[in-house]
Length: 233
Ligand SMILES: *[C@@H]1O[C@H](CO)[C@@H](O)[C@H](O)[C@H]1NC(C)=O
Ligand SMILES: *[C@@H]1O[C@H](CO)[C@@H](O)[C@H](O)[C@H]1NC(C)=O
Ligand SMILES: *[C@@H]1O[C@H](CO)[C@@H](O)[C@H](O)[C@H]1NC(C)=O
Ligand SMILES: *[C@@H]1O[C@H](CO)[C@@H](O)[C@H](O)[C@H]1NC(C)=O
Image (cartoon, rainbow, N blue to C red; front, side, top):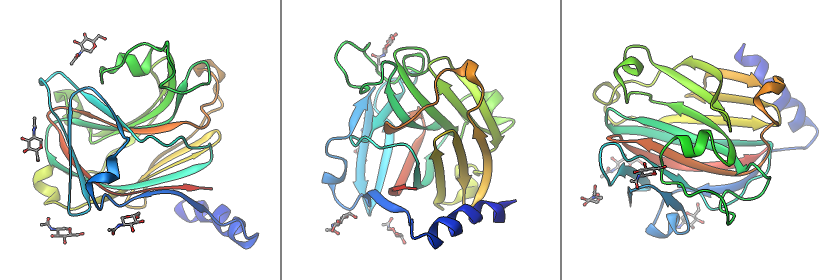
């Protein structure tokens, strides 16, 4: 199954259409997150080429941290993830734009502070991949990674989440890869495919195209991120 995924890559490479690096953040100094936009109370610190994020508010206050760059459709995003303290939940937003097709930061959009409904059922459209879902007891008894499409809170894909608990991970970083190629989305951890999805179901709204990417966490998760890259396909 996985070897099939390589065929388009090899095909494009043979045509000379190699992937192009659009963005790389190695978190190698505190300027690395200058311009990132926090919604909700968060604590971001950089040490040792690692971004560490945690909630800085009450237990029920969550946050989103947006990368300032706007990306086109047809991208591959990779980063390394390590949970430091659990429970909690991690989520990745991609293709985020206003429902009207503009920026998520356009004037006139409703205020956002990390509270989930503002992202899934309001005036922005985005895909969101949740992983390390350990916030609630029902998430902890059966580890799933979810893909949702908004507006509308549509659950469009799910897969088993192989990420271990903090105790068992012993500080190891896992490589996460998200591919967003027009209607096609896939989510991979350490080269293991958790799910892939094709947006052909018209009752979830228009296909998500380009837009911003961002990281969300539910407290009390403390998590670390390294080597964030975005490649155009
Ligand atoms: C930090 O990382 C950026 C992007 O990868 C690179 O261009 C820059 O040279 C690095 N700076 C240092 C001090 O290593
Ligand atoms: C810094 O990161 C490297 C891996 O890039 C790791 O080997 C090292 O132990 C880390 N140092 C500290 C102090 O966390
Ligand atoms: C934020 O992180 C810094 C550095 O790790 C730490 O000293 C501080 O206590 C943290 N603040 C909160 C509110 O978590
Ligand atoms: C975030 O906004 C919601 C309303 O959408 C509000 O109920 C909540 O208290 C706010 N949280 C913070 C931390 O301001």
